[in-house]
Image (cartoon, rainbow, N blue to C red; front, side):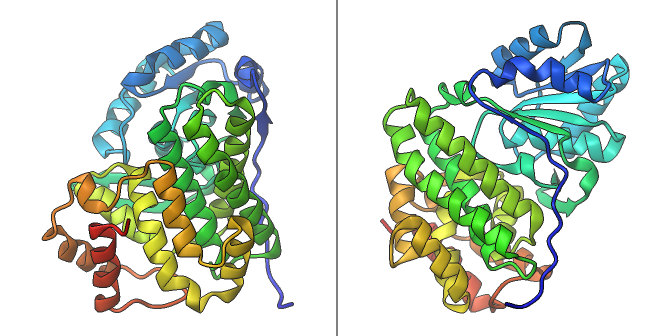
Length: 350
């Protein structure tokens, strides 16, 4: 075995049914007294739930979180944080809300407690993203890591089947790229294998029966593990493509990941045999891209980027943007490679 360096991220996790009842305890651990509650407009009931639990610790709410974290949204949230004298944030929701909490940590230094309600896994990473004028910029900074993550499977029971499936594929994408990242380790490989297996097992059950508590818990555990893989490694071609597609065309984040993943895997895995072996074990299949396509179909991920409204003429602009900035990947794609991946992802394969 070759040598490696593994950095363990300083993450505190509170996991279990009913765990949301402990948010005030987690806030107190951090010494926070004036917490700004973050959510999307659709998650007002969840924001009200944690506001009640926080009692006098809740200084105010901001329900304007948006997908891809537009800089205008961050500026509006900063104004609210300043107006209420916030000394921290509590984010409840999916990747959009957690991304907003990260942006406030990055810009204002506000520590955060997060309560994920989807399977995106971004709460486990020091990766931040901001979108302005159709361009999504990402970076890594340990200051954006949530100080505490509260996983309550009960909160995911109302998550629609389509959202559950797509966000779970998004999490699987984190693990897939971690397996061939240049800074991967045996620890990451073990987490990735378990996380992918958990999600591949749980997601079809969750989609079939949203009240299946055991499956909901297993999916949330898988999301945690897959997110931790991304948090400790370098992103590659898959995430680069999805960030460009999302920022440029304002596409739904999780669905874009679910559509693109099998096509990038088909391109990368021949050059990453160890990653391929781990994924074959985790998915119980000899053909990993085919298994990923089948899983996406089973959980309701749309068939092809054109189903998300992407025009064929948009693909060339996406290729230009991806080629403009370097990133790590097992194979350096030429323009023809990118065009082939995007064409296949656009047309769909089912």
